Image (cartoon, rainbow, N blue to C red; front, top):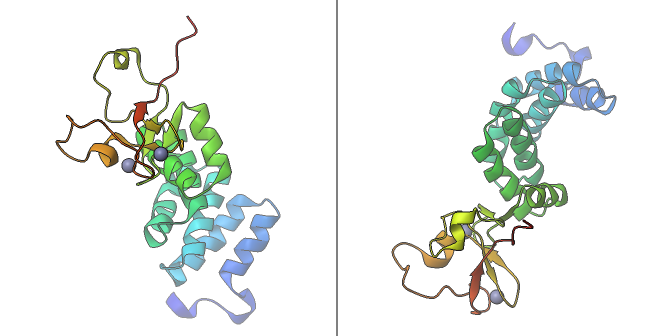
Length: 192
Ligand SMILES: [Zn+2]
Ligand SMILES: [Zn+2]
C-alpha cells in the first residue's frame, strides 16, 4: 500500500476530483481530493478543493482543516478565505467566520464584500480585519469599541481602530492613512 497503492490507471487523484467536482458529485470528489492531499500536503489547490467539496457534501466540520491549511499556505487565496468563512459560519463560529470573510473582501472577492455588508461589517483597508459599519447603540457616546470601522470623510476608505491609532495613541484625532483627512466612526442611524 502506501505510495505504491495508486495504480497507473487510477490517474491523478486531483484531476479525478476536479472531474467529479464539475459534475456536482461533492462527496466522491472529496474522496479523490483526500488522496490528492495525501500525495502532496502542500498543494494549495488540493487543500482548497478538498475543503470546498466537503462543504458542498454538507460536512462543514471536516471542511475547516483543509481550508485553514489552504489559506495558511496561500494567505492571498480569496476563495479559500470565503469558503472557510462560510463553513465556520455554518458551525456557529461567527467571529472567526467574520475574520475570513473580511480578508476575502480585502482580497477582492466580490461576494464576500456583499455578504460582509449585509452583516453590517466592512474590512480595514490596511490590515483586512473586519470592522463594524453599524455600531451598537452604546457607541453613540464617546467610546467606540475596537471593532468599529473608521471611515475617511474624503476617500472614503475604511480602517480598523487598531491600524489608525496603534497602541495608546487614543488622544490623537484619527486621520486617514491614505490621504490624511479626518476619520469618523461608522454607524448608521437607527430607523426607530
Ligand atoms: Zn486594520
Ligand atoms: Zn482618506
